[in-house]
Length: 143
Image 1: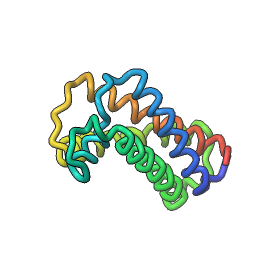
Image 2 (image 1 turned 90 degrees about the horizontal axis):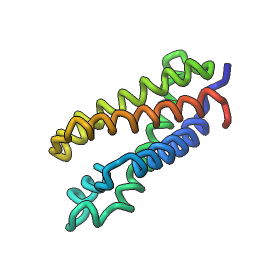
Image 3 (image 1 turned 120 degrees about the vertical axis):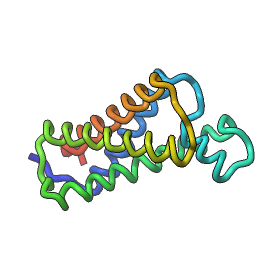
C-alpha cells in the first residue's frame, strides 16, 4: 500500500497528460485539440489551428489540475492508502468521468461540437490512457 500525496497528483497529472498527448498526436486526426478551439473562441480572433500551442498548454494545465484534484479527493473519501491495482482502477474510472464531463459539457455545451463516433471513441481512449497513467503513478508511490 502506498500513500496518495499531493506531489504524486501533480507529477501524475503532468506525466499522464504528456502520455495522453503523445497518443493524441500519434493516433489523432491532426485536427486542433478542443482546447485550441476553446482558446480561439474565448481569447483569440483566428481559427483554432492558429492556437495549437496555447491549446496544448491549456490541456496540460487541465491535466495537472485534474491529477491534483484526484490526489486531494482520494484521501477525503477514504482512499489515502492504495495498492497499485486499486489506484489503476480508480484512475481508469476517473479517466472515464473526465471523458464524460469533457464530452458532454466542453464539447457539446461550451464548444457546440457534434463529433463523429470515431472521434468520440478516440476521445474516450485518450482519457482512459490519462486515467491509467495517473493511477499508475499514484499507486506506484513514485513521489
